[in-house]
Length: 256
Ligand code: 13P
Image (cartoon, rainbow, N blue to C red; front, side, top):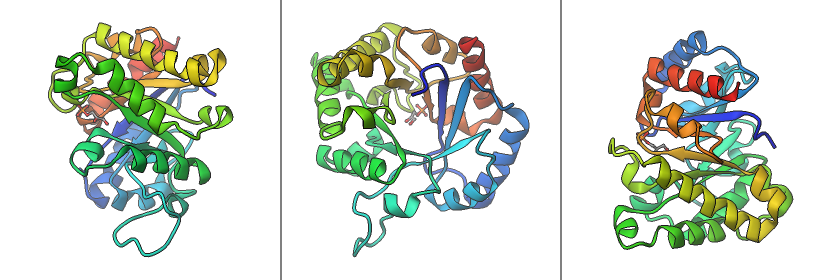
């Protein structure tokens, strides 16, 4: 799978209504050239996902859902399944820290969602990362290790090729307090070592790993230059067309 491409994901979170999302897509489409070396993924609110899927040029942008439910269908009021999202979303953000911490998603939920996405041909972007307290207590490695083991339980080596890991330290998300390059390098090493232990060196070398947490147009290049980092998961800055375009351009320059 494509480690030769940089992957830039814009997570719009609970921002932009359907109309605004559509306008924003068209603004971005005018600014962002189709690049063979950079894959750009947009994760709009669920409400806008369907309409954007009809408007988007998938050579230019892929789409991600920000969450899904792991059962395929049934009496689960208010939920949307990976089966229903099949053909609409290319990727699914799974286990985002806001889902884990605000909505109390468990490791079991995250694991089931990863499997539901794979079952329905949607590529999971599995988010992992420690809280400020866990970091202060020296538990960063254990947290990354545990979230990875749990989220990837039952995933085969072949399926791993469709999975992207996003390292998003909780304390860096939406705070402006972005992680130091050394923090990210250490985390990526823990992630790849763990994948190596579970699935061997080839898998460890081929899985894509992203960084997310207060990335800006100014900081993007520093993260993209780090050993083992294949791209970025961008929140706030992805809502600003100029900033997001600048991030994508940095990825293009990096890939060349
Ligand atoms: P910010 O870039 O706003 O910190 O958000 C990061 C994030 O949570 C992306 O999923």
